[in-house]
Length: 225
Image (cartoon, rainbow, N blue to C red; front, side, top):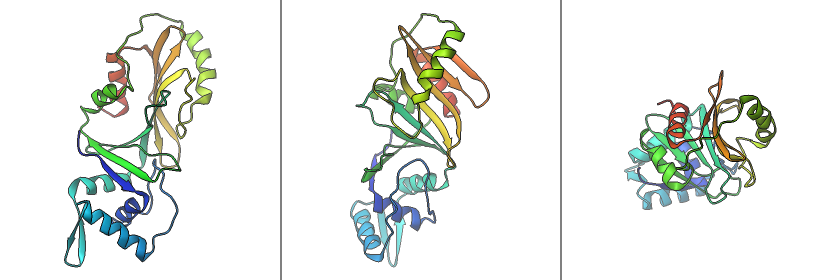
C-alpha cells in the first residue's frame, strides 16, 4: 500500500492538462473551464503539498503522482467496485504496472482520492476494509433456480450507480470501456442462506459457492493475475 493522494477537481484537471490529457474515464471530473487564475492557484496548492516541484520556469510532478495522472489519462477501460454496505465507498480501479484505486465517482465530490497498489496486495486490503467476507457458504442450489433469480436481482445493478442497501447483490466488480461497454464482471449474490459468486469473462458465465479462496480467485481473474 502506498501513500494516499487527495486532489481537488481543479488540481486534478491541471495535472491532467499539464501532462497532455484532456479527459478521463471512470471518475467524475466537473466541466468548469480552467482560466489562468484557477491554474495558478492549483499549481501553488500542489507545490505547497510537495506534489509539484518548481524548477526555474517549469513545474515537475513527483513520480507517484505522474504515474497516477498517466494511468488515468491513458485508461481505455476501468473497473468499478460497489458494496451494498453503505459504509463502504464505491471505488474505481485502473490497471497498469500497478493498480490505481480512486474513491470518487459522485457528481457532488469536490475531491478525488487516489492510491497505487501492487497486484498481490489489493485483495487483502479490500478484505480488511470489509468488501469481502471471511465466511464460506456450502449450501448448493440448482443452476436453473439461480439463473431465474439473477434475471430479477441483476436488473438493479448499474456499474455507474451504487448498489441499493437492500440488494441481493452484496458486492459487484464490473469492467467497463471508456465508451460504457460492459466487458466482464464478478458479483457476490445472496440467495436466502446461500451466498455465491457469479463471474462473467465476456464469453462464459460461471457460478461458484462463496468462500474467501473463491473470492480471491475470481478477484484475481478480474485484475488479470
